[in-house]
Image (tube, rainbow, N blue to C red; front, top):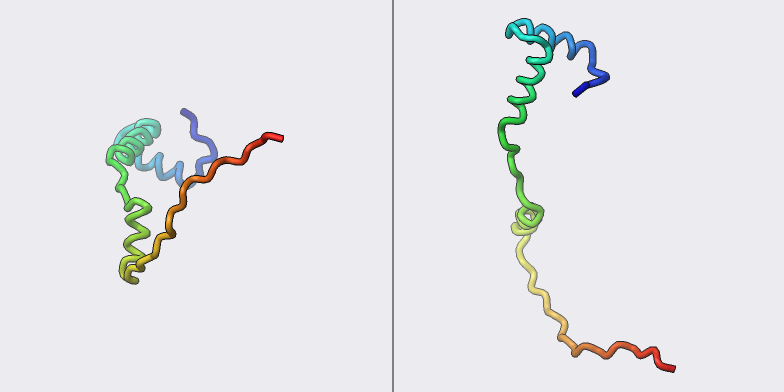
Length: 79
């Protein structure tokens, strides 16, 4: 894996941190990635839960359902 266009200041910080830990920059980068990705990402609310949490305090609304009609026959293509 090659990472291009790394900011020089970031690269310098990685170099210093790697030297502090007595490793190469590559080993230090591996360790940073391993630590960052070892925990499962925090799961947020689902979309329905997020919507419900915003709407629920406003109260509910009873909507009247339109009466159902029987299915109509499809139009014919006969001439």
